[in-house]
Length: 475
Figure 1 (cartoon, rainbow, N blue to C red):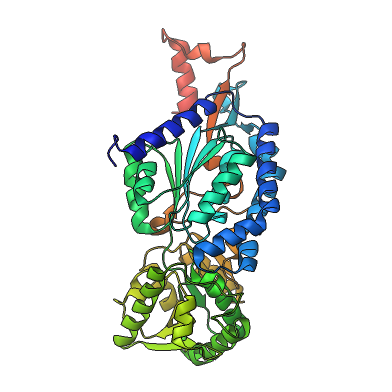
Figure 2: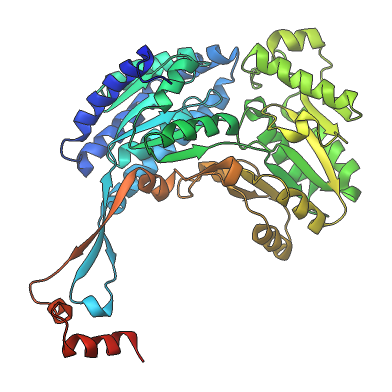
C-alpha cells in the first residue's frame, strides 16, 4: 500500500489521535473497569439491533445463533476480564539469583499503546469484541477494522462504540479491501488479524515493514477424529452441531471426519439422523443460517460438484426434500457428506467454511494420527473417545491450536483458556490472562537496595573478584 494513498493518510491521522491519547498516563484499573462495563451495557441494550444487522449482512442469520454464539460469549469474556483484572494488573514477583540478593525483581504489565484489530465477516461481533476486551483490559486504545462483507454490522458497531466508549478509546474503520490493506500497513503497537491463511501472509508482510508484532488467528482443516468403538450417536450429534452452527461458516468447525473402517456405515446413519432431527427443514427454517453471500454459496456448490465428478460419493441430507431452487433462493445449503474425495480435490485441500463434510476412513489409530500429522497443523482438533490411554496418546502425538474431547467448538469459549493457532493456523493467543499479556508489555524491573554486595565484583579487578569467580563458577 503506497504511503501516500488517501486511505493510508486518513487512517494515519486516526492512529495519531489515538496514540496521543495512549501517551497520557496509563489508565488505572477503575478506568479499565468502566470501559468493560460500558461494553457490557452496549451488548445488553442493543442485542436485538446487533442480531438484526448481522442477519441483514448474511441474507439471513438465526437470531438465536447470534445471541448464543456471539453476544453471550462476548459478555462472558467481559465478565471474566472484570473479575480477574486486578490480579492480571498486579505486579508479579520474580525470584532473584542468590548472587544478587537482597535485590527484588518484579514483572509489571503496561499497555502497548494502540492496537489494531482486523475482523472477519463470519462472526463480526464476537471476533471484534473478543480481542477488543483483551486490548481494553490491558489499557490500550484500539482501531478496529470491520469486514466489508458486513457493512451494516460495521456501521452499527461504529455508532455504538462511539456512544459508549468514545473516539478517544476505540474507533471503528469500515471500508473495502483497499482500506484493509492500508490498515494493515499502519505502525500499530500490535496487530491482530482473524481470517484466512492466505490473507494472513499478506497482513504479516505488511506489518513486518513497521516491525509491528502480530497475532494471527487463521483457520485450516480441523479434524474430528472418532476413535474405534466410540459412541457414534454422541459423536454424530456433536459433529452436526459444530458443523451446522452458522452453516459451517466457523473457523473451528469440524472440517472433515476420521472414522474407523468398521464404524463408517453406522456413523453415516447417525449423521443423517442427527442432522434431520436438528434441522428437519432448511429453506424457511429460522434456526438455520444462510451462506453469507452468493459467491460463497457458488464456491461450495462448485467444490461439491468437482469432488463428485472426480469420483466422490456425495450424500445430501435434505430431510424435507426441498427443491434445489428453493434452497438456492434462500442460500441454504444442506449438510452434505462426501466420501472418497480425491486428495487433490478442493474439499480435501482447502478449508471448507460451509456445510460440506468429507468422511475419511482409517484402519488403526496410528494411521489416523499420521493422517493428521502430515497435514498443516489445524486450528482445532476434536477427539471422540472415552478411553483415557488413547485420549492421552492423541493429545501427546498431535499438535493443534486447541482440542475439545467428546464435543466440538467449546474450548474456544472457555474464558480461562487461551485461544490461538499453530503453524499455518496462526500464531499468538488471546482470551484469558494470555490475551491480557498479548496486548501488554511485561516489563521486568530489578530493585537494588542501598546496601548490597555488587561492589565486590567491580573494577579494578583484584584477588577478591578472582576468589568470588572461583566460588561462583566452580572448579
